[in-house]
Length: 481
Image (tube, rainbow, N blue to C red; front, side):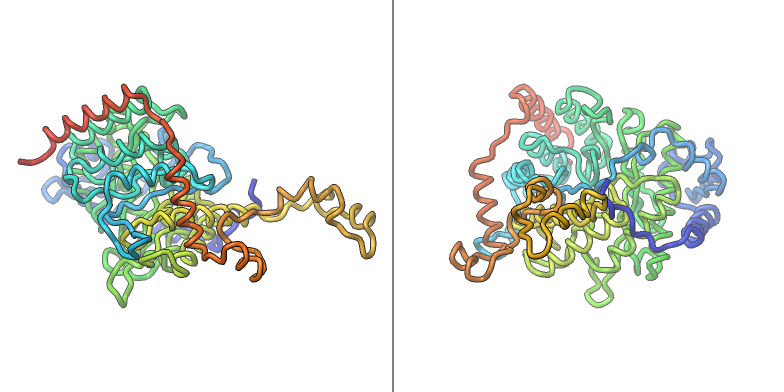
């Protein structure tokens, strides 16, 4: 077990209780708006207080607490490895072009290439939706994205350890049905090899405290199909919640627990995991402050609050977002600090490797792979035993001894030494003689080398043909005339 993983928790149980009590009070007195008659009926039958005319659902505190303790299908209740995993996600329609030093529209080939690149990077374990092709109709984005991802890497999932491949853009029930069909083609049935359902969909609140009809209808379909729901919100502190980070955490927690209670009202065995997506409004630019300290602090506190409530966070906030527009010092600093904060807080997975503020970058993905390896090494901490203290070695070598000659170096060097692939540790003279290239220049060379040589074959011809037939059906049935 990494010695430093999950060791950062500066908040007391009394402080978490204060946050949780505020959440329960908000859900019981204010409630949430649910724009779906069928979901309102389920909520009423489950013991919620429902105002059908105003479409308001209020949740008794004891019901929410019961649901937190009795949710057998919650993936956040199962034991999780004590480690932090990394995922390539971004969801942008642009790519930072290294050669031109500017943004360009993303293409379906970019989706395939980001997938192949992720497949070859040792420290990035998953991928979900790296980017999207703006020329593809909105209704078809999820199908087109995952057709390319599934065909080019076995590292499926995204966002957190073994997370389900999930719908992101089009939550219309007819589109969800096609996505589930494609997922079943990918995995050969209703479940993945790890036993989890094949498909998922993010069911998020329209903050503050609203659940729109399309999301609820998609949720009902997924529940009927026994697939997984990712429950959360994308609340923005300062505009959709109080500007204080404690208020932001309470608002997001309320929307998460409301969505959980709604799903359990339909199916007590609902398969779901929580997402951790608190955002914050930059008070100068009036944009979402990706990569900021506010961003990371709220996510870390929300991780602790979930643990206080009995959940091991399954998919964490996209902490590798950044305010930078190209691979630079700002991007590296924000991503490294965010990943380290997530690991110290005990998050299971972080996403948005390769993402810039409004684009994806091949070079940044390779740099993020380096950052991931470095953070994992930090989280290992120091192993303190009689053997690692090595007092006998010190006594044997004595005063003036050359420890490099001792056999213990070969035995233990791989445990303690992290070998960088991009970051430089050479003297200036050696660096100049060998190539004198910057980190981003080396990253670009690595990108070109991997994309030239790495061509995994993940799907059979039959699987590809079936997926293409489903996509063709989607173009005929989903596109609004």
